[in-house]
Image (cartoon, rainbow, N blue to C red; front, side, top):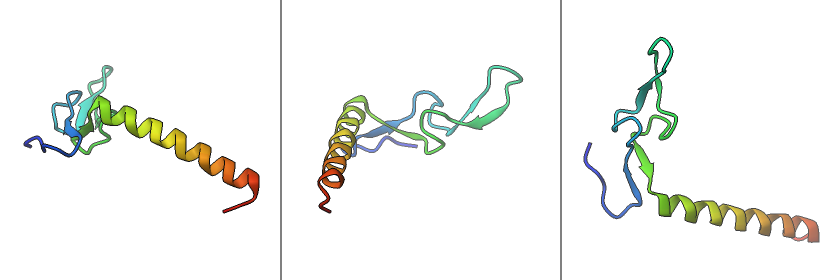
Length: 70
């Protein structure tokens, strides 16, 4: 699967873009924990930005509900 340029996502390095990984015990196949089977993974910068964005929106939502405004 080719990398998609400009969308902030790249091929998952944990599962090598297959979407599956093997457990250490019994080598059982399961979906990749890092990309959750999508075979793509957010780059670090986008991941940090999204995390900060979610914190800010959650804080704004809590403030709105505390004030009683929607």
